[in-house]
Amino acid sequence: MISKKQHKKTLFTDKFLLSCLCLSLVLLSGCSNHKPRVIPDEVIAEINAKPKKLQDLYKLHYQEGQRNHVLNNMHIGVAAMEIGNFPIAKQVFTDAILEIEKVYSDTDEAAKARSLWYEEGSKIFKGEPYERASIYYYLGLIDLMEGDYENARAAFKSGILQDAFAEEKQFQCDFALLIFLEGWASHLLGDEDYAKQAFSEVKKLRPDFKFPDKNHNTLLIAETGRSPRKVADGVGHSELKYRRGKAFKENRVIFSIDDTKIAGYPMEDIYFQAASRGGRAVDKLIEGKAVFRKQASNIGLTLSDIANKGMLVSPLLGSAGGAASAVSGGLAVLGAVTTIAAIHANPHADVRYWKNLSDTIHIATLESTEVDTQFNISFADRNGKDYMDLKSEPAPKARDNQNIYWVRSRSSFNEKNKWHNIFNKNK
Image 1: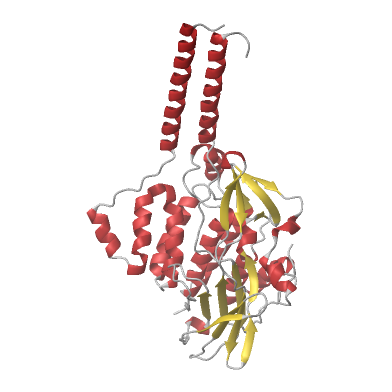
Image 2: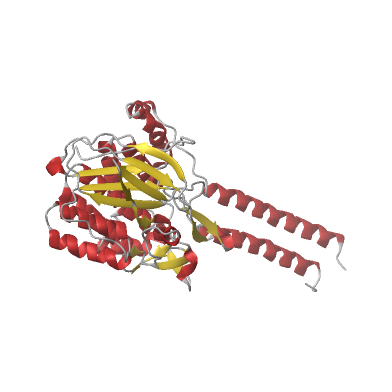
């Protein structure tokens, strides 16, 4: 039988330990907060000198600091391309690459950094392989638009390397778009042997891909849909999983020149790139380690869906008294504190992601000699229903009569019920 004194002692012990638990919860939750930095007047002045459409993005960039430095550069880069400000886009993408290559480059120093990355720096965003590869994709596009084909090819090669990196392991690159663009840059350089080699690699990944004709000098690129999403799942939300982007239907592209219609070839499914490693479907990532699905067929590729509708691409691939009760209760409370501490010591899955990426990227190539060539672009759903027709700007004569056009179906600026008509070309 428990005496009043023992009972009071037990209550005191439980209350004390419960208070410790609550305090621990407060302290631990406080550790996970990321308060935005106050923007000083001199920085505000610098931001106000930026293009108006990019100012909110730059404010967020400063407020979130180093933790989201790379991520915010990604967002700014695509938005800057959309408004035609390539100097800013090139600057922020290059800055992001410098940060990424401290960890994800093919050097001994970077390999050492990767061995410590998840323990020491998991809160600083560096991106998943598909995001890192996409930075090089956009930077390479800018180089193509500027007529710098050597640097464009180097950028696409670097993107291929990032796609091959999967933390401590490497898998075969299957980012067909980057391989194609490497070949296209070689084609523009007149290096047809190298171009043929790259296009042959694309053919292995996309069996019905047709090599561009040697006289083709114009590249059309259309991006459709919204970025793949990252979600946290499992015990303690420690598992990272991918979901396809939401709230879009368009996944086909038709380019029209006078009476000629060219179907955009759905070269890359960005969701597939997110949710796979070297063609192998990933079920989840735990602390950066991939757990592969036993059957990749469950991934539901956009390219396969398009192919099934007759488009261009084949499917890819206690009893001892009061004192003992107090101890038992105390151990339970302390156990809870320890569990909570363990959850916070092993961070939740990082669900930050590059939100203004697209879902699918389509390409077409042709020979163009007209200075004032214009293209109509039609976006459609899987059933062929059109959503909107867009018209390109006239194309000025480019370096060596070589042009590149780039269009996106979705804007980075939350413009509702609008298609984003952005065409840029080599000037």
